[in-house]
Image (cartoon, rainbow, N blue to C red; front, side, top):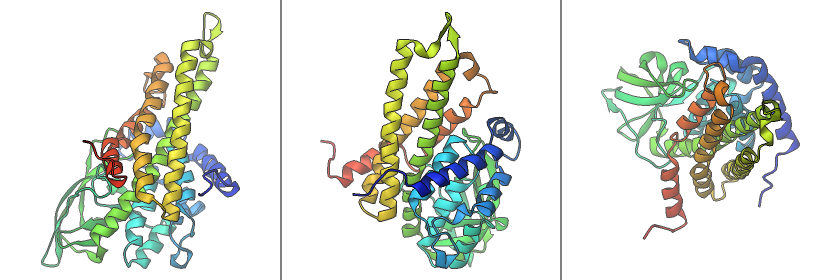
Length: 357
């Protein structure tokens, strides 16, 4: 069995990413950006890709990447979750990259690995691994159709589009009409992609590529949810130590201690599930089960942690100036991304042959 503890290299990576995000994704800056027409922080994205080479962690070295594993990517996503960073890392460096790894597209992989181009898989964000997804028509050498709820399509340079002929096509984003949708989580924008005869380059089999991409997305999303839950718990504990009522720190009240202790146990269990999913994606052992377990558990913990943070911050937590609302919205949006917890529980029951009577 693999050691799920963080290695020295992973902890060093965490420290470097946290320092970078402290400079680029402070809470007031993220709040201000979500209120603008350009929610993506492209300066932070450039620092992560050009400065640290993190976009190519999953890409083998002989294809222009870093040749790292899903465990290192999970550490990066934990820190991005802690900062609710508005960057397309999960959608481009994980989901789109995994789709390309299942195809013969080394040139596109190299471009995504350097961060010079950003990719997006044109599959709705709520689709679970193995679930049904929309496709477009491939007709007369062009692609026709509309795909909705595509995450980070607004900043994508290349769209990976599944078609009705079973192929996955690379489409230059400039050849598509990308219409923003109003998302609940403003740090991960959604859009409708419309294709009207757009030319596409056939990459490979869509079913295999989409399944691989969504499975990796679901498994590593748990690490983002872990980072989110860990930040909200840590900040809530810090606040309750400082806030006083009746000349006593609020954190000393027994009822609040019990709530925080229960939340701490949930976060610890989530860390184990998220690390196991990242390790399974790396080793290829019981991957489907590990991913289903992680996503069956992660959503409720992340949402609970964010809800507790909002309530226990009292009046200040209800204001737009405090960042806790960003975490609650991200937690809620993540709870349906790449499949709901219920969908993953149903999938897990099938995998272990434990169906309902």
